[in-house]
Amino acid sequence: PNRNDVVNFAAGPSTLPTVVLEKAAQGLLNYNGLGMGVAEISHRSKEFKAVSEKTVSDFKTLMDVPDTHEVLLMQGGGMGAFSTVVLNLLAAWKLQNPESNAKTTLDYIVTGSWSNKAAGEAKRLTQGTDVSVNVALDARNHSQDGKSFSNIPPANEWKYSENPAFVYYCDNETVNGVEFDKSFPYDSLPPNTNLVADVSSNILSRKIDVSKHAVVYGGAQKNAGIAGLTLVIVRKDLLVDTDAAFNLGGIPQVPHLCDYKRHADNESMYNTPPMFAIYVSGLTFEHILNHGGVDEYSKRSDRKSSKLYQVIDNSNGLYKPKVSPESRSRMNVVFTLPDEETEKRYLNEADKLGLKNLKGHRSVGGIRASLYNGITEEDADKLIEMMKSFK
Ligand code: PLP
Image 1: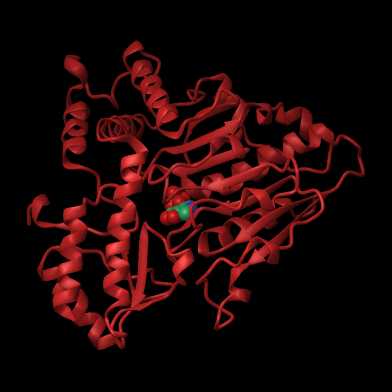
Image 2 (image 1 turned 90 degrees about the horizontal axis):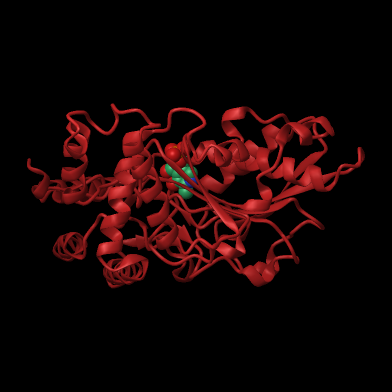
């Protein structure tokens, strides 16, 4: 099939606008008439520096990044950031609490598979240190069946620890289809808490108040480009000398390549950056800016997802939603069909119409339709029509 014959509802890597990819393909072959592709020129050349600077500047505009925060272009994906956040924020904490008997906790708000994985990594990295991990919420314990991620209970039911080095949450849980309603409940936080957000799967799909966060990060490959680039926004006072912090004892050492300050001091060119991925993100940001910015994409996301949920809710039980209405994701719509046979027929029917990659994550099964920024309202309508007629 042609690109135009297919709608890719994959959860990630996900679809990008064809015009963005056409420009990217051209730039990969011959950037700006240089006779060389954008991934072939020196990352220290003035041409690539211009690409990188514009990418960061457009990203700052889209995200309303305040002067208090720095943008880093890193690698390692969302999972890389599970580790770097812990290492860097603990170094910052240690410099503020240099006493040899200082102890702290890291609070995790676990609302789905990804925040659960992040909490697991934090536990690994802090083994044998003066730091412990507190799961302030495990949403599974608040679900009807006691084992699935299907809602986010109100913050007065969470258990923050006394003085955590940070509180961590995932704004949109890609596998489970669970998203914070409008935003994290900032008012629930103890004063001066460092808040960390994983926005890998809903970045640039709605406004987020960066000023309320210590770190906001996301892999680019859903709403913001292709895999290879991790976008990290970090408050400037958290860019610290991690060696000095380590020498005080009680915290893990930080590999140079994971060190936020090192990346910031070198304008994200401490080592060779993922140049093509940065270029594609730059083109994606430009495209979003030229089409109404985050406000417009936020409205589109609301319209696409609410139409789809309506079909699900009005299906007399054929399509069963997995998530309670107030926590339903606008990005990843998950539901089940009555049995395996019907599910197979549904996927076949969709496939015949070019509606691809609708199978749910292998860990939870069912159906998952991902409605990232690259999915137009017309694309979403094709699925909606198919689901009505399938019913
Ligand atoms: N966090 C979220 C919310 C994700 O959806 C994903 C991947 O789908 C990850 C983290 C892990 O990202 P990566 O595969 O880039 O390491």
